[in-house]
Length: 412
Image (cartoon, rainbow, N blue to C red):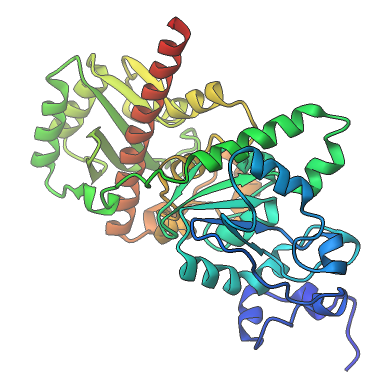
């Protein structure tokens, strides 16, 4: 059969890929010298995932061309063959030594996941964005971006039970190190971070979904809000789910709200209708209790426009503090931060389809477009809203601890 303008691979989807038996559907095995490079190494605690075999490996076999990687791992006390196992996000080298595509990674991902399941490593070092794609591309919503976004984090991945440490690929480091010596220094720092986690257990976490309590009675909501208002020394994270990004268009409203002032407890409820409950909300917002949010200008704006009053004593914005601690692009989102800091991934899945406006609505009204959040199943919406508040509170506490440590180090 004659193909059209695009090849089968170019038009393939993840669902199509899963129907193809074996790992040869992507066609890379036809372009390389050594197909399906095997996993090697005697280590039991460190899994190194390269994005693809390097040029020398494809000519000479496993391990060839690994001199730089081997040298820098030795520098941090790791032997590539004796302390690690090495595998690949894509096991066949792409023609021209280009980076693998997400679809090519999809074909090989089952082998990577099987290796993790078999080995149960303490630390996974992901060499390059293809390796990161292999580990998280099927679990995150939207694209994953570039390696600059991911490198430098020690991710406590709960599904794998291992620390994931993304670093730049050796190919990239070798290509640019002579012109930019800071690249090698950054790479060494990231590899040292991975080595330092070898005997560090993952933090123990409570199931966050069990930490969200849904309140249905407005009398219970009112009592809760007044209790939170009593102490001006406390702090509370709160989060709205609204019908859009901006509240200016007629008909916009707050659909639900969640509050959290404890590491293991958040409360979520539909936006109150009774005056007494709304009065209790206003009391909390105007009290001296410290307020926490992710991108607080959003909650502040909606409180002013919809509720008709302001928010007193903002003390923490987890998005702004993230930017202060690390000014890289595209890292300040709550979903990204809760994964790389707390290991929480995909908690928005149940309501994801309702969070955005459709394309025509967005084209017509921009930031004032209506989404479909009011159509989301009530329980799933409130759990999601509660998790937002809970994770914002947990992230704020983690950030406060980090800044305290930095200040203490500066004083020393």
